[in-house]
Image 1 (cartoon, rainbow, N blue to C red):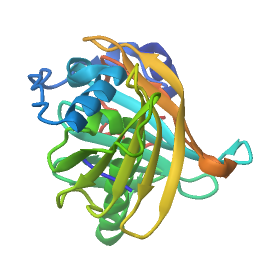
Image 2 (image 1 turned 30 degrees about the vertical axis):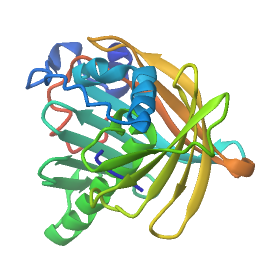
Image 3 (image 1 turned 180 degrees about the horizontal axis):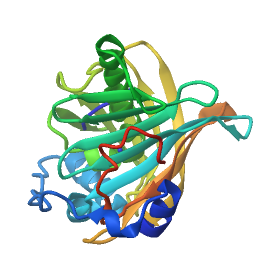
Length: 267
């Protein structure tokens, strides 16, 4: 999947860095533009967005760290580690490369340019291109599983109210995409609590002809300079066939200066 639309001291300890090496975000927080609510589906989408923290808190978040992993029979597989400078677009991914091996991909999500490394050694141009394409795909997919409520008003997203699926407890909206992202033929159905707006479940049909349905649970609250954000850390597959984890979330306000240049595993 998808698409553009994802405890500073603890982070420093995990990465083995000195706190004095931190740097503030390179660019100021962007201006918050409130979307126009022209339809019932728009109003419901904004209810879900506000339940997740809202436009102001999301716009003010300078950095985001999380991990993405699959779980089967209660056992999580090794996770893919993400770190995002939301002001500059600089991005860091660390992912397993085999026994005692780690890929580090350092790139910019806006330009898609960067360099990939295996155990600290730069890959050649062919391998680098392949790994950067993989890294960008992971950025699109993994952040969408974490951040969908914040991306409901992204350019190209069409929101439609589903009255036949909604009921006294839940509102349902359908999402489709106007030639945006890596898989514009995907479709999603978002189930949210009618009173709170919190996303409880989503179902999808992908352009690859795959279907899925997952409950969103394990919500956590994380502070930002403009207020709290709320993230679901666990997406449980219908029928109990495993789960996807979007967890180990951190929302630091500063970071070690070299995290987006150091090729060695740090996270």
